[in-house]
Image (cartoon, rainbow, N blue to C red; front, top):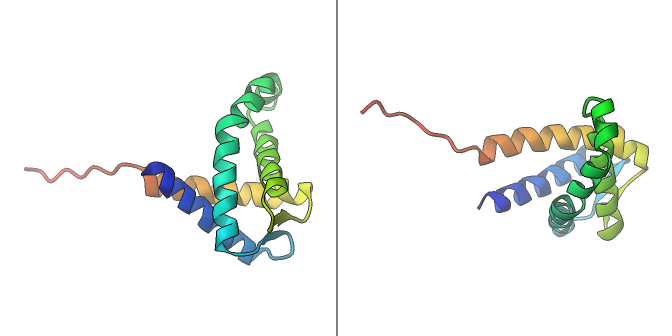
Length: 122
């Protein structure tokens, strides 16, 4: 269930960012956004851990900021694999889409997928 919530969240974030920044980020329709979210989830599961491990010294040296570049690479790979999902440039992907996507996805995924326990006091 958590995977589906993250997939839907990622799809919605892609659609929102595509609407907010039409000159730098293009998503044709909701099916394209869903496909891009699925491809990104697969890439993040398979390729991202390998990249993080290979670039660990650089990530430590930059105090974790190099992960932004890794996230940009993951989004660029997604854009290469999914038609109708594209960035204006790699620099645009790093500066705007990654930062916005990372922040929005982190906040929304945290809100939607965190188990909330309420103490009724009984």
